[in-house]
Length: 205
Length: 104
Image (tube, rainbow over all chains, first blue to last red; front, side):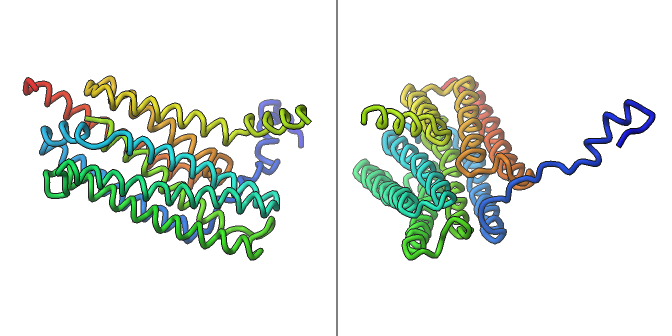
């Protein structure tokens, strides 16, 4: 379509030609509502932690030095790897490669279990050092946030186990895999929240 | 056989998600190194917050696959992380400045 005005001609294609359609958001709408609710929940935890940090500066300054950075680091590495595994599982199911999907889901499950074991080890180390949720406000906040996150990892691992079973029996395939994408999005949310928890609790003083 | 093995390895290592995973691991190790030094300066806080933003950005775009999807979902998730990281950075930096002001 051409007009007598060249400036208008330049604009015309962008108005008349359809824009490239954005890809569908992975997962169902329901799981995204759930993810937003979970992010809001953790948002309140973070705000609570920061308010407590302002009131009890000394306890929050000394706190990170008393907990194991190594276990925090290992958990971060495990969760980032699990996010990579589940992303590969989604890619594999999109290719219709059932065996690869199962393999990546198994790695994700192993990472989820590994995270729980490392967290138990960390709590055990704290106990040996005489640290408990009642020690001070820093440790009360630390246990509240990390235990809550641990519960989310457990729920996420059970969900991934369930999707692995459904994949194994052929319920998910190249054309229908929304449930797997939903579980993967939830798992990524757990990883994202930990990306913020790690510096907040273990690194920043 | 070696050529096939090389091709397979090259394909795997040049895959975008694998590359991002390596970068995420590197940034995490950097954060842990800062934690081990016990550095409580504002500069360290800003640096760690930048690392968080970069990591969240990669996970959201590449692992979650939101880069080419509806902008609303992507903006909500990224906005949450950018906003929350900014809040953490500002409060931790304020706490560090006032703590140093007390002569600790």
